[in-house]
Image (spheres, helix red, strand yellow):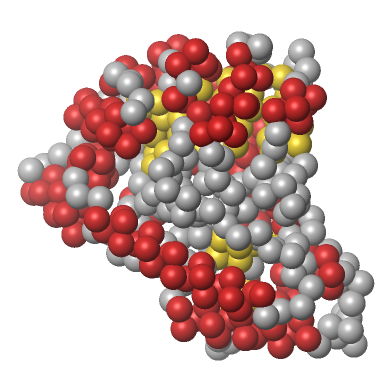
Length: 398
């Protein structure tokens, strides 16, 4: 029997990040010592005060359905966090919590994008951005960047990409996968363009906010005259080491929030009640565990860059945030180890997985075909072992 599946499934691809992690697990199950530099997950445990809040919530029987948009105290905690960290004024009615920032993004895209609407996305971008646009029936418009531009766009490039069909602009800062971070001055330049196009909604993914090596995080929502155009997206996964807890949130104008609440009411209703109570402790509690984690990422970034600089042919931008490096590896394209030829970044990722037993993610998934993403969210010994293997594997390409 052959089941007829929806044509929707043909519009988008499986996330390459998850695919590479799956391939790594399969090799590991066969006894191969695979070092994982593919997944974007902090290798830290959730801070104790957050776990304690979850345990208390369980003991206090917060185990029933919650409002679709989240508990009021959670939304108030988000507003407190946004004011404290970003000097942004929002009210609870401007906030909705979802089952991870990925669902938050999906809600917004499905609420805003119709068939053939255009969504501008600077490259490189997180793998899910483009696929969500395709699910909604929209058209992805890429603005290509380079290592030399620090993977950031200019106001002129933004203006040139806008057409009457442009509905949404989406980006992340700090960026996954490049690690680029927009300064206040750079965001001000982009905001100047958006002022001329009040119908464009700006999706600002700030999930890596606390992993920022450039000092204070800057949000494009800080510019009051375009604030109603901005949807701020954030969550618990990266800054609080809570990937499995599944809570993301958005802050936006009430019209967009209500639209997303309507969608979410049919898809998942609210996210986990216990996670919501833990999130309150995360947002208003002690940030020292998050700061300590970020400091460790600084050390790992330094070590990773030292190791990468020792490898010929890699063009590497020094990441300003997040926990990835995204080197241009095209120097090795066309080279061979005698049995296989590396023609693109997908070949390179598979070669490193099968030969060096190090998992990574090919740049094609992020809209940049010359690059490969490597995470440094792993222990220092594993990082050193991984890059020693990568160096040896690349040296065998002639």
